[in-house]
Every structure is written in C-alpha cells, then in structure tokens.
Length: 71
Image 1: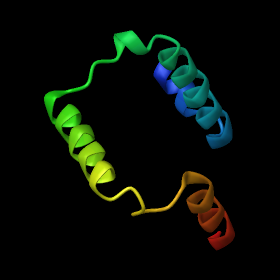
Image 2: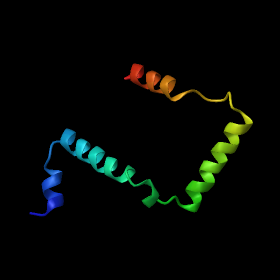
Image 3: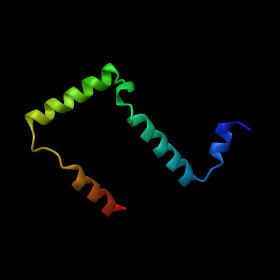
Image 4: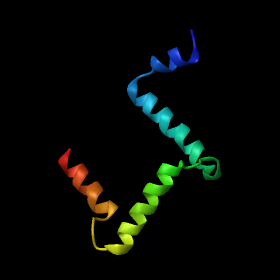
C-alpha cells in the first residue's frame, strides 16, 4: 500500500492536522516560496487600493468574528 493510500485512510480531522503541520514547515522557509508574476501584480494592486482608500474594508478580527458568529 502506498503512503498516499494510507494517508487517505486517516480520519478527516487527522488529515487536516497533517496538512496544517506540513504547512507550518513550509512557512518556516518563506524565502523558498516564490510568488508568480500574477500573484505579485495582484498584491501590488491591493496595496495600491489600500493606499488610495485606507478606510475601505474591515479588520481581520472583525471579519473572523462575523464568520464565527454565522456558523
């Protein structure tokens, strides 16, 4: 049986935890994650929009609270 097959047999909660743990190892090396030109352009666009309209939008904590309250 392949490793991937064994992983697929894990309960969903365990697979999610595994993905989170794996992601944590990736973000420990941010210099190894390269943005595509499209991603860079989108980030620049969003930064420009923020600079032009700093009061637009809501803070993360507010958004997270709204999401949690809607569940």
